[in-house]
Amino acid sequence: MELPRSMTNPYYFFQICLFLLVMTACASPDSAPTSETAAATMETAMLSWDANGAPDLEGYKIYLATASGGYGAPVATVPMDLTSYTVTGLETGITYFFVVTAYNSSGAESSFSNEVSKTIL
Image 1: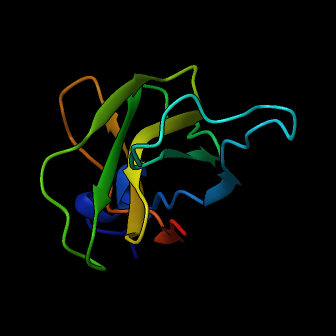
Image 2: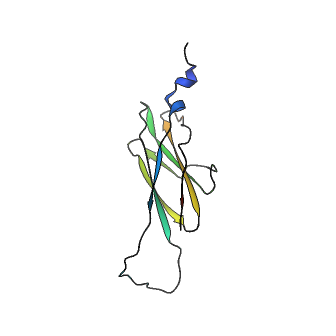
Image 3: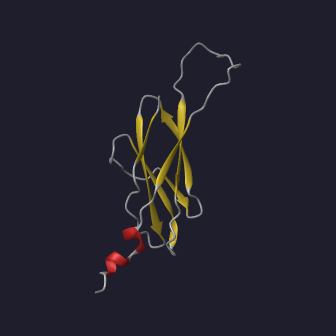
């Protein structure tokens, strides 16, 4: 028995394992504030994933949301030789959710990777 053509597409079975490395900026203990006005600290999240071995892979798309599963347009697109991305400009007090997809030369896109989240404290 032969599998339907749609099930032999490498993007049908492709799953990206996404990892979140928590990175925060820390002030030096010797540094002193230069102003008395408070400003929101912008934080980052370092994402990394396993490479896709599809022969016509073009790259990856990174998605971000503030509600689980609430993804819109990708926030970044990276070439196939990159398997990490640093998301910048994250605000304190918010939980962010991230997924990654792979896409090929004809524009076909894989399903979302597993979802990871980061709460900025």
